[in-house]
Image 1 (cartoon, rainbow, N blue to C red):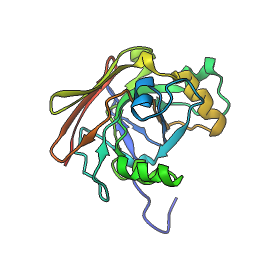
Image 2: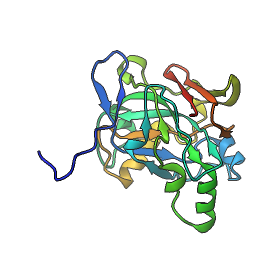
Image 3: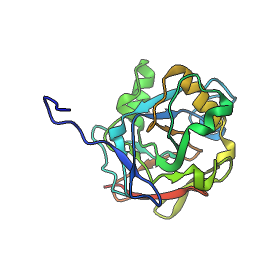
Image 4: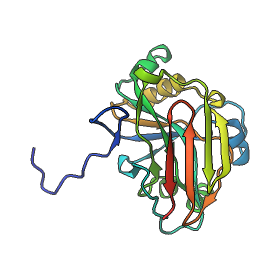
Length: 228
C-alpha cells in the first residue's frame, strides 16, 4: 500500500525471549485504581465505576531510554504501573474469558504534567495535555503470560535516585485485570496490541532533570529511566 505522505513507524515493545516485537496500538490508562493513591489525590477511595484516559501509541518510550523533560510544565510526576498487553481483541468480553485475551505483561510509567492536568480539571477540560504528550509512556519489554501466568499479587515499587517513592502490591488493585478488560470492551472494541496501564500506588511525586527512576513489578520486570 502506498500513501500520499510517509507513514509513521509502528510503535513496538521488545518481548522477552523473542526476536519479534509486540506492536503497540492504543494505550488505555485506568485512573485512581489504588485506594491510597485515590486518597492522596483528594478522592474517595471506595470502589466506584472505573474511568479511563488514553495515550497515543507513539508516546511509548522503550529500552530504558532517557525521558526528555517535556515542555510547558514545571511539575512532572511519575506513576509506576503494571501494564497489560493484549494479544486478542474483542467487544463485550466476559470477565471469565478476559485473561485469554492477554499476551503478556510489562512495567510502565504513566508520566504526567501534573500542573497542566490540574488546570484542565479545574476548567472541566480533557486531560490530554497532562497525560498524552511525547514520551509519556516509558515501558519495559513484554513478558509472555504463557511463561509467568497472570499476576494477582506482587510488589509494585519505584525508587528515584535510590530512595523509595512508591510502593504497593498488585493485589491492592481496586478493579482487577479481568474486570478492567470486560469493562473496557463494553466501551471500545479492543484490538490486539492495545495496552492497559492498570493504575498506580500512592507516592506519586515530581521529578527534575537528572533524576533516575528505577521501578519494578515483582514477577514481571523492571524499568530504569533517567530524566534528561
